[in-house]
Amino acid sequence: MTDPSRDDLASAVLDGLLGDEEAAAALRDPAVARRVEEMRAVRSLLQPAPPLDAARRERSIAAALAAADTARTPGGPRTPEEPHTPAAAGAPAGRRYGPGFDSSDERPAAPAGLDERRRRGARRAHAARWLPAAAVILVVLAVAGLVAVAGSSSDSDMAADTASEGGESNDTGSGEATAESSEASGDEQDATSAPEESGGQDDADASGGTMEGSTESGAAADSAAPGAARSLGAFATADDLAAAADATAGPHAGAALGQDVTADEAEARLETFAAEAGCEPPAAGRAGDGPIPVLLGNATLAGAPVTVWVLDDADGRRIVVLDAACAVVDDRVLPTG
Amino acid sequence: MAGARSGDRSALDALLRRHHDRLFALCRRLAGNDADAHDALQEALIAIVRGLDRFDGRSAFSTWSYRVATNAALDELRRRKRRPLPGLPTDERGGLVPGPGSGRGGGAVGRPGLTRPGVVGGGGHGGTGPGIDGVVADRLDVDAALARLPEDYRVAVVLRDVCTLDYAEIAEVLGIPPGTVRSRIARGRGLLADLLGNRDAPTERPSTGP
Image (cartoon, rainbow over all chains, first blue to last red; front, side):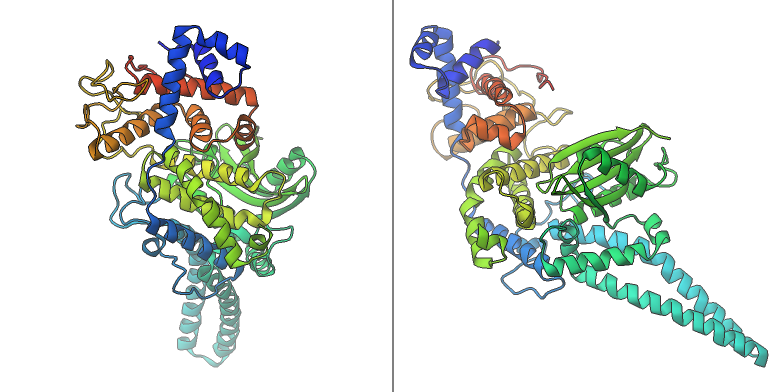
């Protein structure tokens, strides 16, 4: 049976934390001496890490360099030595599976590497954002067509007006589609550009600005797919930041999981947020049947860039702040109401 | 470092190469298998290159990168927690269950201070002697024993005994007091010795406390 005090002593001896006399005294106890030897043997078993596959080493470094290049050059072309597909980047086929990757927890039909996973999240968000707009455009065009077919002279003016409106819609759509195209071609830089309020790459900042602008242009799109990071500003304290995030997120989503927001949608939002933030969702975001991710924000807290996750569940609103290393720097639950 | 941060590709390449192997060793021991370790490492490297602009230099780059890699490996573990390890029996919590003859000491393996266990039960490699089979069996034993440690203990032990960080560095990586580091390392080593040694393996995972 493990004896904690003996283990403490043995571990301290092993690491040379005790003075010579203390160590000698400790080792006079046969049980401690034996424990030291056991721990030493354990350490010797741990230290030689299993051999590293040199080819995989090269691929993982190449993938990281490619990610860096993508972050610096939105939509820039990839050179042949910069793999970005799972296979090229070294993600073995059939291993990327499990929660968040496919519907089944068992082995999926197709692998999803890191890049692919991020692209999927972005595609989900884009689809949710643009489908309603596309539907509106189709309806407008259909109405215009019907009016034109009706074809009276007085109706012609109306048809022209309607067509003009349709043109405006198309203009908006094409403008946004351009933005989407930009994001789709370089969706990885979205994950990193937004938080870089202090001294980031110019290109990345420009990309973040474009994304932010297109998001703010449509509140309806936001409510359909809150997948774009919001810039919350700079704050001196976590309290101020939490208050701003709470206000920006709007009304509490309630315990609507399964009604307004399905578990799949919540998971998709988590993945989208993760892709944008460049961090895995905080542990609280992966808990069981909830919560609902409602906002991802970028901010500066006490001079350091952070990302802010706002997650709603039946108990309240959770605000989690992650630093640049994706470590939690603040985690609080605001009561509902 | 400055070159890598300013976008010098060759500097970034050199930086990644310099730190790659030790980060892999960390991920490998935390993840428990090569495949997940490579995935975690890839996540970590990408997070590192993307976060390089925001690395404020208040801590050593190695400490920061260990922190990123640790988080990546633990995230990988959480994603994989419902997937059983190939070829090894697991309980409902993903831990390994002792097999026939395990837990009361199997055949000696001739290592000083340790005899062949029982943590990896019935895996078909018990009692192996020296040679490649024995090496593979040892590796499985170590991975399986590490997998049974509470996460807090496992991370602390790996950072100390695999990455050879000192207590202060581990405290910085994990954001916990050095005293807590010392305690977790001692508990983790003790449990590992129990699991890999010839005594009865604990039947329950201990609480890691706050």
